[in-house]
Image (cartoon, rainbow, N blue to C red; front, side, top):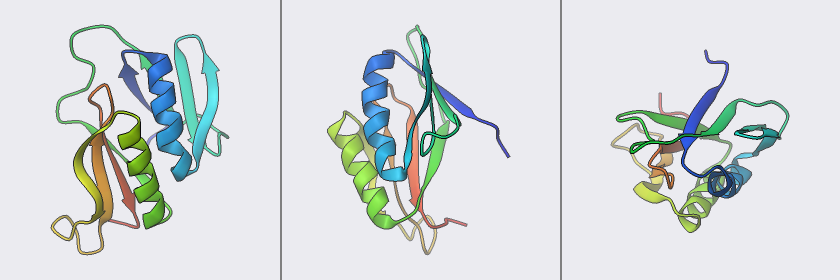
Length: 125
């Protein structure tokens, strides 16, 4: 349904440290890197998610969020813990949330730039 996604960040170096740690439990790593751009993908094989430096008062889009799939609940927990260690803000802690869907297990955080990220193990549909 999509080819790739990108987010704007204030500090590309700081964002790299955050996303390296955030994606490691999910099996993604840097697929490409050049001045002004970092691409991540499954196992570092193909760039599907990109970071670009941006300037301005507001970086994150209002109401927008990206949801990532985790293979296991423990991967959700590890990515959540890593994100929190690297400056994330919790919106919804990692765990079961039957109010969202009966089998939902996941979390929602804000990265250090305010981008809303969700991690889901299994399915929420």
